[in-house]
Amino acid sequence: MTAPGASSATTYKMGPKGQVVIPKQIRDRLDLKPGDRLLVREAQDGVHIRKAVVDAAERQAILARLRGALAGAPSLTAGLEAERRAEREREDRSSRRAAP
Image (tube, rainbow, N blue to C red; front, side, top):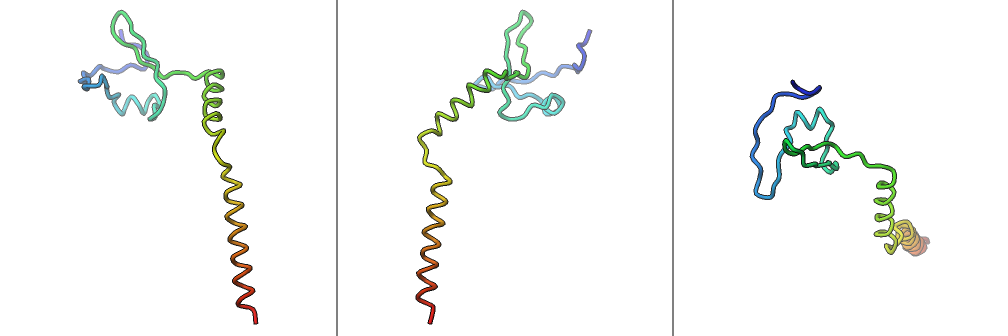
């Protein structure tokens, strides 16, 4: 008996690093995108792979790590404002020289 949504099986070769390509038709049908997290579970009959669901706690942990990585970085807004001030000063000096 075939599971709902299942199609006929095809044999694929595993690469030297243990990688297996998920066929495009299946990726499209399951809306799998590069970077998606997959849950890989060993089962009695082989390996089961499904799209992982990221819960709210994991999402918060990921955001906290990203915030921590950016915490010491200089403010991009402050840098842009400083560049704009310097540009405005150059324009002012240049316009004063050009004035009769």
